[in-house]
Image (cartoon, rainbow over all chains, first blue to last red; front, side, top):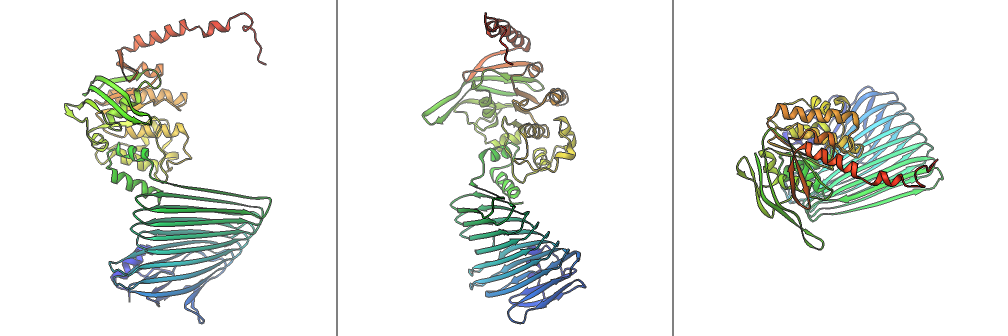
Length: 305
Length: 250
């Protein structure tokens, strides 16, 4: 059963108001509680370890899969999910984890998501992390995402974490074959004494594969962020990493770029910048009548959009 | 009416204090266009920044319709009806043109974003949903900046070199826009410019040099002085010197 609290969490992480249409699997406190499959999308519980297999038939078009996870008490949850996106399918997968922890025990969800984007398939993967509750127990999320994109496939990742999560280590590994494309958009805001680490490694193994990683973050108060974005070109390929952080108060941000070419025709670019909000941006918005706080919020809102 | 009485601004520079404005006295009436001109580094932008509150006056007073705004913060001055179009406007990652214009217009002033962009020579369809980021050229940025001031209901509108980066076709539109603003509102318009065509809009020309008002004069007088400068200039004559006249650069 979904309580109103659960529904709030679902709204935050998956933007759904009620039981979604189409294929979905809702996991709460370590148990699957609701599931629906469709003609083209099957969801099967793994037998050897906790987790599910999501199997999307070839040529499936315009369908969504929702696989939100919610934790409403202190506990450790570990899950392995495997996604098989059939040839020439075009789907959107909305994952995400919401934690409501009122307890003083830590609530931790570690997920390993493995994706196979088959030939010519297109996948958009949206992952939102959200934590709430007044308990002293930490809200900890450690997602590991492994993606293999076959020939002509496209993977688009949107990874969002705004406040709420005390500790996170996010590992993302992507392998791109011939003509495969990857677009990653990461948004993060930490505050208080939160700690976040994001490691993204992209292996461009196929000719004419392309990857674009855009990471934008805001670090406030005493929070710490570490970004290690790594691109490795093994073929004639193009890769671009853009990592922008706004630093405020006593926060700390490390941005560690790494690009490696193993092929003479690999073109890799890394741009990284850390800085405070530009004063001329603040002055401009204040000269339109916004207070300093309103101007700051507006700038951050745009930056993280 | 905006009044500056003995306004001075001293800033902390790397080598101690620097006086950038001294004894500025100006009375600016509603529904008039003032063009501020003068040599580079003379203090024109600093006067505008002192009026907007970006620079805090260290002496003197600034009165807006009799209300002392000398030490009011930027936000409050903006809410009282002072607006400033930056010489070098900032870019904003993630903020779209229509969002900036909505922030500018606020809740009270109903205006069409399309008309505003048309007035600065930009096509609304192409620009409303564009982010004001590094893909904007200097000229495009300037035009959006000017539109963000036109969107507001202002007592005093300050434009800092609005023509910079604007092409010839839009220049005509720009001068018409200032004329329309002057015709349709009571706003005191202050334009910092060196351009003859902008100078021709002026009810009064304010010459700023060495951090102070050197002269308040008419456009006719300034334009005839410029003409005189051109006539007296020896540069052209130098090129007529023997041996230089028929130099072929090809």
